[in-house]
Amino acid sequence: MSIQRAHLKPWILPIAMLCGMLFHTAIESVQFLAPYLIFAMLLITFCRIKPSEFHIGKLTVSVVAVQVIGSVVVYLLLRGISSDLACGGMICVLCPTATAAPVITAMLGGSIAILVAISVLSNLAAAVCVPAFFALTDAAVGDIRFIDTFLTILYKVGPLILLPMAVAMAMRYILPSVHRAISSKQGISFYLWAVSLIIVVGRAVSFAMAEPADRIPEMIALAVVAAVVCVLQFIIGRILGRRYGDKIAGAQGLGQKNTVLAVWMAVTFLNPICSIAPAAYILWQNIINSLQIFLKEKRDKSHN
Image (cartoon, rainbow, N blue to C red; front, side):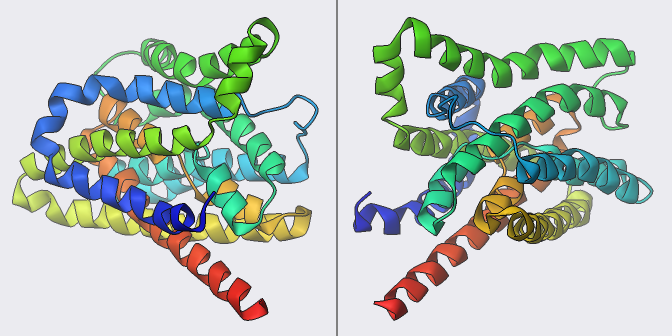
């Protein structure tokens, strides 16, 4: 990666968010592309996994445990205040590790192998837990039985997360040349993420602007919850990483979330106002990532 591109990358996602905000009225015509873009991002990411490098260690298990248990804790803590607030906080924790997290981890000097292991297990946990957790929440869309809600969400979310992994593993043995070509183009997933971001942020902004003024305090509260959850996850991930061998991989694995997937799931399966939390999380995590990259570059310069 050239120095110029390294400097530009922290700004690409904020620019994508700004585009989603500015052109939100035109997003409706292309919103159907979101799940396909998410599928493509995950496929590219999973193609980089080498079975020999994949190892589930204590850090991986600890990060995913916090992801699952922490989401329940956040929901229970906030449920007494507001169901939408509880669901918004929950999805910011339950959401799996971002597909672009390996890029940021590499830029910060962390272990990509550990991060990829966290990403895989994190996505598996989300595929299993999201349908069950969403179906049990008060904000789940529709007045239907738990099993119906669970199966509906599993039908839509499960393949979106698990199928890219299966396709990537199959291509490694059936179409090795195609697999090598995809695995060598990891940077594409970052830009697909940016395009997806435009779509999901646009949808969230369109919903927010259609809400009456009396819901603004609730939307601000959702953004504040996202900020607190974001900071805590980076801190907890860093503490776990320091304990089990890689503080950068731990922090990015737990703190950097696939917010594109989170906003899409919130808009699709919960009260759409819940999507304000993961949409705000996009801003908070990119502020933290940009600050981390800035501080690392500053340290590197001081050592030269």
